[in-house]
Amino acid sequence: MDATRTGGDASAGVGRPASVARLSGDWSQLLLAAAACDDAVRFQALARKAVRLEREMGPPVGHTPVRVALLGGASTDLLVLPLQLALRVVGLAPILHVAPYNVWFQEMLEHDSQTSRFAPQVAIALITAHSIPIWPQPGTGPEAATKLAQSVCRQIYEACGQLHDRCGTDVVLNTLPPFPHQPLGNLSAKSADDANNFIRRVNVLLGDMAPPYVHLNDVAALVERRGLDHWFDVRLWHEAKQLVAPGFIPELVRNTAAVVGGILGRTRKCLVLDLDNTLWGGAVGDAGVEGIVLGEGTGIGEAFKSFQTHVKAMKDRGVLLAVCSKNDERQAMRPFEEHPETVLRRQDFVAFMANWDPKSDNLRAIAKELNIGLDSLVFVDDNPAEREEVRQALPEVLVPEMSDDPTDYPRILDAARCFEVPAITSEDRQRSEMYRGQRQLDELAASTRDLSDFLASLEMEAVVRPFETLSLARITQLVNKTNQFNLTTRRLTGTEVEALMTNPSAFTRTVRLADRFGDHGLISVLWGRVERNTLTIDGWLMSCRVLKRGVERLLLNEVVAAAKARGVSRIIGTHIPSDRNALVEHHYEDLGFSEAGERDNVRTWWLETGDYEPRQAYIRLAEAVFR
Image (tube, rainbow, N blue to C red; front, side, top):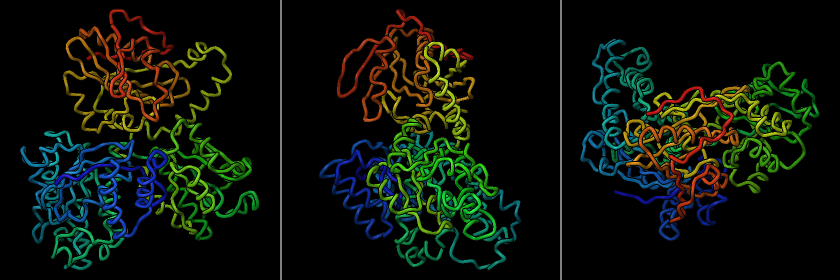
């Protein structure tokens, strides 16, 4: 069964799709409704409406096409349309193939299976504990049970690896919920041969043994949160092999879509927080630092501290933090500097807007300051009027619907599923520090009149290398998240990036950059293909944090030198305009390329390597490797 495609851009169940400002009215209304809908019957109705709408209008504009295979160790019939809708809501345009019932293992292993012929970019394997082929016998001890669980995981990952090697597929595999029965009672917790005890071992090892192209959809965690008796309907399993009760289908498909969206880079970047009654109780301007409620001593104070701890953990994994508060700036700063129980400090925030302007204006200013799109922002505010003002003014910004109880805040933010990533890179962990260094650099730029003197004063150093396995996660992340300095906005999965590394005709380069303000990590990616004496550049992008530093000139110098070493006499570059990449409209022209023409909205440029004179870049080349 092949289903149709289209997409959206939102975090499930909270706020709005990020791209609604760029959608037609009918699509935006439908995706807004789907993003906020928790009723399973209503969600199914919206999913059917989306199919009709695509027939009438075509898919929404600007969504990322992706070929998705749905494989199940249970019946997936009731999941097909809701999954399509959930993928649309996160900004994807799915072309969906649904494999036959309960042949997921065979479909992955067989070279000529329907799934292999479909050649999916992403395969979603929704399996259950019934899919486990071998179980511990009575009396099996912990060590033997662990070895058996390892064997189970190896079998599963062998099948995933076969599909990956054959089709270049990334696989989304769910963790396994327990069985609803517990014949050993509480003794099962210390019995290695108990079925649910064994399932727990398998789940841990699925995480420990997962190869880079397998991404775990933590369904077991969803079941723990919602309760197995609610999530799983035993009667429906026996009668129809339904792996989830109908009422929880929206949550299952949203969680699944969030993982797929993370693979394709459909994630947010910055969490913007209100202060009073969001990060602490009370108004600091009225009560003073000593009067706000935060920390040990009261349940509410502990709840606010717990939320700060949760937010700090998000920052440490790469989410940017910013403040947007109606407050006197000096008063707003004081809790971060003076309160003994605060977890967050001023240096944890890359932008700090505390004034009396409309919050939508401040959110625009934050996006501009950080050089990211409004659809990269998530805004958390306890005040419903402020939330609605932002929703009305900035539909691209995701605004979760908060409760009036701070103990709910971490759960609500988790439910948004808007910061999903397939891996955490070293650049993620250092992102806030990089932005602080950028502020220092901006201050230096403002005080320096001559551009050449400014660039030279940065003491920049770069490493230029082909794609490497150690950089795979960061390359994939940058390819899928970069919009402004991106010549073609072509997206690649991690598997597709990996394939470029082993393709003899491929040409790939990355740039790492450091200056006297810090290490910026891997900030630019270029890839293309060499055919006879021509190098065609299929993708060229760069982080917006290092714009106008001369990185593109340095990279072109290295590309030309490496291309000439491979016998290339001509380099072809393409520019595919989008609503976000006007910044690079004259990129090739500025680098000395000649325009060859335009066709089907693709502008083509060419450069003869023999005539090329290296450009001045003011960047010391620390290392370059030609391959």
